[in-house]
Amino acid sequence: MSERHGTAAKLPIRHEDDGRRGAFVVERDGAELARMTYVHAGDARIIIDHTEVSDALRGQGAGLQLVQAGVEWARAAKLKVIATCPFAKATLDKHPELQDVVA
Image: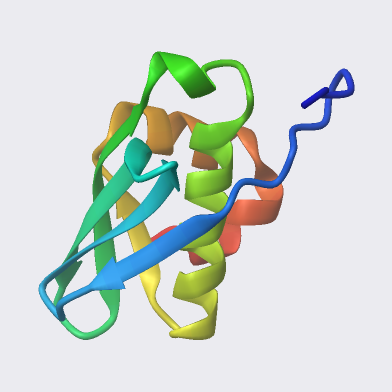
């Protein structure tokens, strides 16, 4: 799989949510390669608390794609996002197009 400079291949991201906690996950061949987790904070907010990307996906934009997936879901669900995860916070701060959901 090749990657053009500046653009990463879109990864398949699965969303899981039990009403209290949730995650956006990238798996390949049954192995989890990346995960961003959050907790619900009341009815109107989520807190992104952790992002982890395996070495197999480093440099492929997986972390950014996880944050983008979380933002798209939060927009659709009319939720605001608080990031306590340093990576997610830095990503939200760096990308103005994602900041409309930041609490």
